[in-house]
Image (cartoon, rainbow, N blue to C red; front, side, top):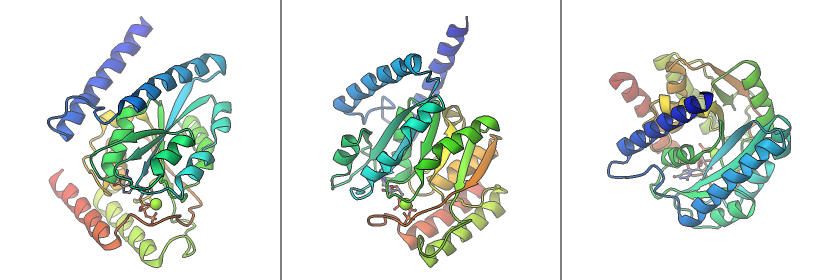
Length: 286
Ligand SMILES: Nc1nc2c(ncn2[C@@H]2O[C@H](COP(=O)(O)OP(=O)(O)OP(=O)(O)O)[C@@H](O)[C@H]2O)c(=O)[nH]1
Ligand SMILES: [Mg+2]
């Protein structure tokens, strides 16, 4: 009986995801058109490995770490290696690491693959589109995210997972701004981040103190229930607004943000204005 319930739930979640994908990308037949055969095969064998691990090592859940990467050959290897797989295993979690690339012209894909990550190629450009591809392919019960530029301390994942379990949270945001300094972020970015956070709090009454942080941990089950449309940089703020507005139990944790390795992909003025307009339009039209 229980097994039937679970498989029905999984089937309906998958159908929802497919429908959502078709709405977002009209004309697409499958939510996974961008998986090449090699990646797809590896994904299946990884799933088996993860399932074997569940029975062998008291692993009860899987965490998928989704990392968008665009020309991040200097950071991606260290980022993947920093993920504390053994500590997560001690908490009962198997780890799946996914790097989502859409258009890198450097060695990002190869370095990610050589360090044990699954590489997914999303042909449609954009930060938000990269995340959508990652979430559609994630096998985890929990999803964690972060940049490929060595700025986010992936070593705190076990702490975040413990908090999530103890407080039965659905979504955790991280706050880079609490302890930020000009050693790790430029003055203009610090100002921009405070400004965008202020507008988001004013327009949507969200409790978060860092609307642009790219490190989140959440239950995968909430993803089909929220409506994140952004394909680019506003994806980050929209995910937070949606998670909070749909009534999911949210929290925020300060982190030690680090200076970036490699070239910034963000255009301060263009993306800053784009994010403000996104907030205003989202407030007016939804
Ligand atoms: N796949 C993919 N990744 C992207 C794209 N744009 C940015 N990224 C990645 O998304 C992450 C965030 O971009 P960043 O340039 O670091 O932007 P940011 O973190 O707001 O700015 P910094 O604080 O200067 O790092 C990085 O890992 C980028 O490589 C994109 O179009 N496609
Ligand atoms: Mg970054």
